[in-house]
Image: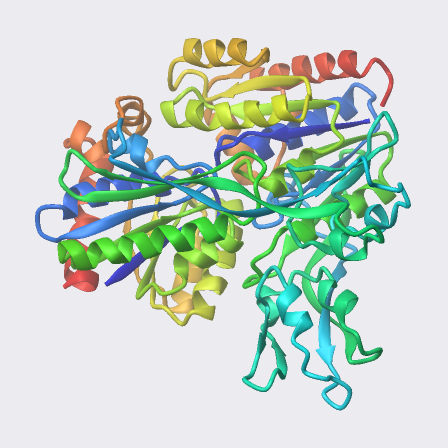
Length: 296
Length: 290
């Protein structure tokens, strides 16, 4: 089974909860974990991974380059770039901003001088594999700064993870998705059997998780909700009301607990570092519900 | 002039800093427009307690094939870097709309006039919202199910530039991909919001790299500064020639103001002083050049 964990909003505790859940599920299930937040991957850190066994460069991002020698400075590329990624430098040369280029090649197609603008394949990032000290494998990716299409990196991560599942005869893939609702999240949720959404009781988090849920609905996946920092905003009932209206079962509520950031500083899942903390106890209960209701 | 608030990791407090800095800057007389370019999860309006207004759709080009004219030459499919156009065995092209980035490459290479016609679809919206704080908020919001946030970032930034008054402050998405660099592009100052946890520090390094690659002077604001080791952030900042300009301890008051949609910069809480200090430094940096 493939389980994707998403939140829409960043910083609501998605990776910290995922790390704890993986820790609690490791004895009863076999799985591969995937950190699908390729722009800010943190799951490896939380699981104490310090070395990667295998690293694959991902070449595939395409970036346009302009040959200044043959460029006649007509400016057509500058006018036609759909994303405004071409600028004129101090010497009057037309230059592609490699940190914003989407690689669509429109500039190359409209350029009147053959061979002046070329589309070059560059490295978009790396995908890595580690066996965590807890025994299960982790696949993680890191997009290079300023590169497009982190979603493609996530798709490749999941392909690698699927291969590992076959090789090692693993039952599940658990995917920790990025913040937002764009390509990384769509790649994370696509193909999942179940989505677990994590939100905190704030209007901002409610707004973002509602948007993530709409993406889940595109894939017609059953969704569940975990409410994190459940006590930081007493009186806010928006999450519960929304979940009830949509028929999304709430797997549990985790109270705000300073043990969580403390455990992060120790680079350990909170359930391992502080098993007696109130947040840990809540996560243990949630893990039991997940075992019963989702993983079977 | 333009400045950017960003931070690598999600949830470090970018929007909290951006909205409160905007309020604090306005309070000391700086005219500005705030642009929320976190188009996948825009929240500045919620933090400011305002309803999004003046909605405009962002229409994105997509090809519509006139099959009576199409010669099935497959050029459109070959040139599509997104593989959004698939062809049947005989060469008949079909579009997969969500993959289409609207770049018009297919239209450019199509040899038959009129075989590719202009169609559009709405991929999201931009908003121009007046706020009770004396500045306007411009927001970009990607439609759920759309994969590509770049066109929305470009559209929202363009609209922000059209309506801006004085300084343009942009609030970016998490991460350090090319949509973040697009949002940051053109800024004279990058304010990186971080938290001093190992995760925060890991992601801060990436945004500092981005600042360096883009040659933009970078400041660091350490949020929840008592929940980790600020010394480590300081080392990192020094490595990249960035400066820590503010430290904001974890605060129930900030959480409260955040959930209530009332900027803390307007209160008498001691935290308001931190934003006032930050605003004064920014104003000094701008040197009246906003």
